[in-house]
Image (cartoon, rainbow, N blue to C red; front, side, top):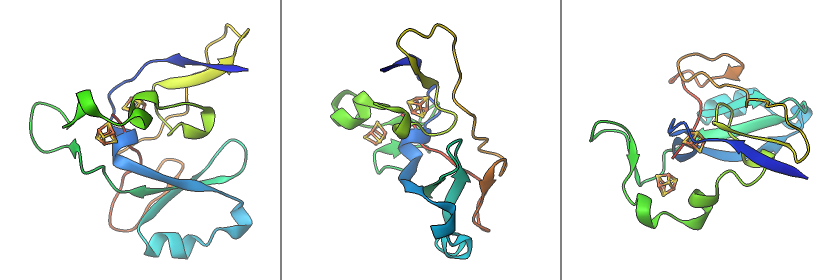
Amino acid sequence: MKVRKGECKRCGKCCRYLYIGKYNPKDVDEEYLRARGLIWLTDGDGLVRVYANLPCLCYNEEEGPFPHCEIYPARPLSCKAYPVSEDDLIPGCGYYFVEEDEEKEKPNEEIDDNSTGGLAEPQSSSTTDSGE
Ligand code: SF4
Ligand code: SF4
């Protein structure tokens, strides 16, 4: 059984990017994803993870000293519990999962918001994640 380690880095990726799902590469049409403005990357398991750059309506990136959730004290349980499992993890999240008896820490892979490193980006933007 795996346990969660790490901590929230307040990157905002889980609030900004909507995880669509994992797909077999042979089922992925990159032209279609690009045309729809979706973002994708190949995970360690060889599957393709697809995200939409669709910030939560409660995520305020414009006002205040830093991006924040406008309903943070009353945020949904799914937000409070994130990430529940490895499948939930958005690349670059400060949390990661290890086997219960495993002491060695293994940081989550990073997604660079300012580049397409590992990501195929829509032509119009150059970003990739979501957060809290
Ligand atoms: S923590 Fe707040 S801003 Fe982030 S997804 Fe949840 S409700 Fe939206
Ligand atoms: S993705 Fe969300 S939970 Fe993970 S570090 Fe960023 S804000 Fe925190």
